[in-house]
Length: 419
Image 1 (cartoon, helix red, strand yellow):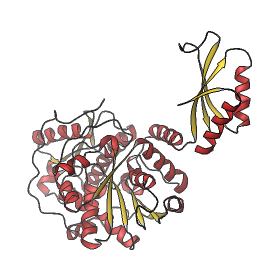
Image 2: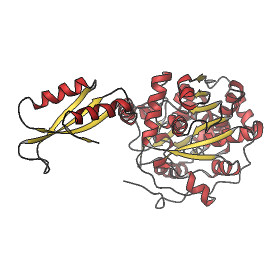
Image 3: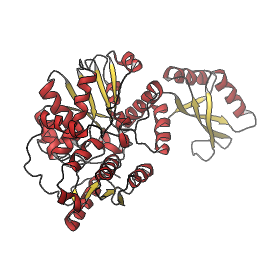
Image 4: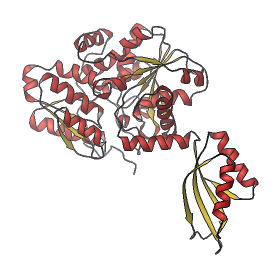
């Protein structure tokens, strides 16, 4: 069911904070020395061939706690005063910020409480608790969990560690850009998954000051895209949230701090569909042997959806996280196989008599497809008494093979309906 956030309690105004500069990001990088992993970049020959540009993957999925989020979380917590540390911290997250805060708090000896949506992935909940945080499940989205975190901060005096709307968090995330410039000095395009905006804002600010020739593109899931409307309005606007596999970037309201940077630096924002996300995840998994979560595949999804040559190379796609529930991964991979034309769903009308199914199976085998699943439907009103629909899922070699299988079956005399 779609959700809006107009009915949620209003968030308190963001205090007047100084802008994030490249010097702030460099200071954050020094603070993070010896704390985080300097994640590798991996050149993808397969993606380069598909897109016509040199493609390099920035592997934040290999970061400590499984995503870039620990960068901003640690910087924010490390800059708390002793009195603030003694009060403890509270955060809200679908999983990656939760783990980043929990890990950073454990390293700094700070008590942490984290609010997570009730349907947050179980491995993310377990990992956050494993790092020592007190996890509370509340609400149906990150935005609703954030409301609960604000209430707790007001009640208990804990310091709210916002997942993206604070200069220290943005500065910490911006350290990704410093590494990219060292690792791929001739970079021309950077594609960044975009939810609340902390990562893309930090990266955009660094590149605008140090390498203004680099194009920065933020990529949102089309089912959870608050930035396009907000940028058009000139102010953060609550968006309609629909279910998306990219829970890590499903944020209904941009943060004021990152929004200001994204707007002022002219960051381009694109959206990608669920099919495009699943195909991108599958491509990275198959061709680069890297495990990423759907949100982390957003940049690659935008790259694959673009026309050849649309992004000038070298292109760096930031793989923002790798924390994915194995059950979700299974569904996403299956979805990606269907989207990539590797699976095809067919409905074939048969006369309901002995040997009819065997004949269909022989025809499918002759076409070189593999049967994955079969079921019969005998109660459809479109069927005669002596007929049956056979719903069948086939594994194929790709879109061209799918078409060839369907044409072969029809040529043999079968009535075939494609789903």
